[in-house]
Length: 245
Image 1 (tube, one colour):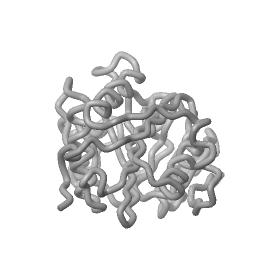
Image 2 (cartoon, rainbow, N blue to C red):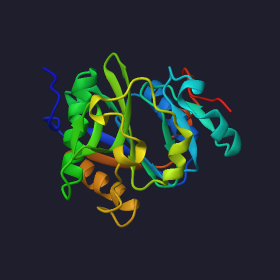
Image 3 (tube, rainbow, N blue to C red):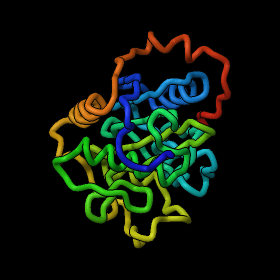
Image 4 (cartoon, rainbow, N blue to C red):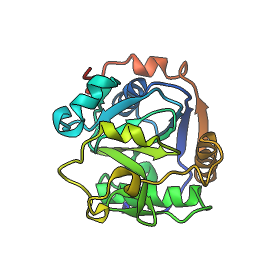
């Protein structure tokens, strides 16, 4: 029976792709290929990406992004293949994506089960601070440091986390207040709602290091490179990630 917490009973195998400065559009293309055209378990890490705005697959640009501010300070707008909200990302964002076979981890393809498993994994990865899952956000106290998006299919799931190592307050001006917000936000503006991991990590790269260390404690891990996955990316598969401007 599949559960929502704890490591797999046997050591499953993970492929690790640790990227630096890869644009988020390219990262999402890689994720979609590994999800749809491969059958392995993957952990994809990335940081130092160029600025962009990423929306969920059902996001409507005019309702989520300040058009006037975007015209004055243009950045790419991307619609990813998964659900979730809208996020401004830049070189201070750390990404962690898990693509997993439900049977290998004994974690069923249901949002709550995946969220709980990932929250437990991050708690073990980051023992220096007390974090928890709050209405699908990763928080310290009542402030959000990580948002996520998921894609669930029969027997296979993806969980993508955008972590704020730091953020520039002016970049929040790109984003409008969404119509649907978590109750715990209580209509707080971004600077009062968000927090960063910078006070816990002197460098963004150390976030990745702790995730990798925890991954190796729980699983058999094979390090991969972009060259290793070139053949997978070129396999025929559905492609839903697009750049809107």
